[in-house]
Image 1 (spheres, rainbow, N blue to C red):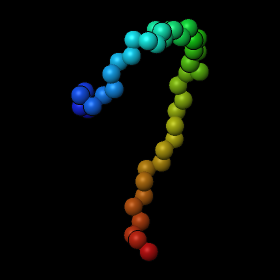
Image 2: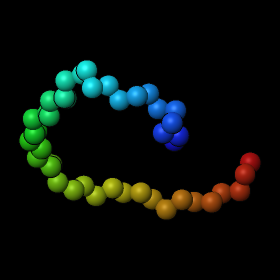
Image 3: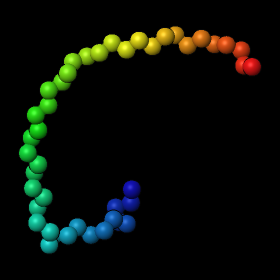
Length: 43
């Protein structure tokens, strides 16, 4: 990125408000069954 092409920083805008923290509860881990790929000759 070329900084000289960036728009100038505006000091007229108020500072952005920080968003409140959110609660997150992980449902856990899950096993995924992925069968081995079978190489069949092209038809």
